[in-house]
Image (cartoon, rainbow, N blue to C red; front, side, top):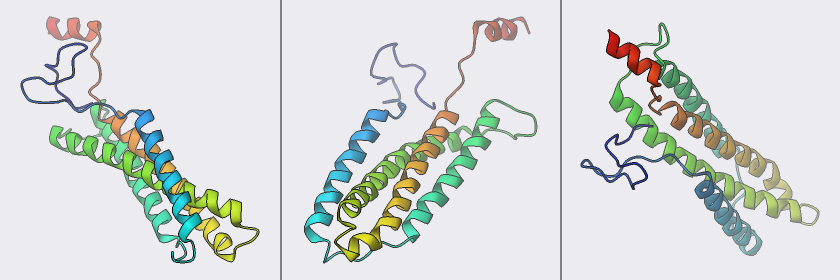
Length: 176
């Protein structure tokens, strides 16, 4: 990924230019999603009568963002690998896409957790509450949208990584 190449091996990455951009940890995303799910479930259980019903728009927005980031991941990977007709690579754009991917993966995890908490509440109460039945389908759609956004963001983040050069490539570059 875009980062500080001068960081010492095994170090924190605090080189002369500051901290490096590290890959997103799956554990951080899982913790964010679980904490948000628990909070959403608690809020829905306590205040379901005061909260308006969910709509489909946020779920569709999450899905749309996932599609955009998936396309960006495919295009960025092609440019990083220098495929024919892929175009030139702007390093600043790759850095911006990497930051977008990190933010989107965390945001997607938070949304997936929130919608997952609402969906869990709606599943547990759908037999007795009309509000739970009305919120179940949009909550499941939001959960799927958040998860798809996380997956697309992680793909985009992976596409922004600088490929490792093997020893064979280094030797062939030196011989030229």
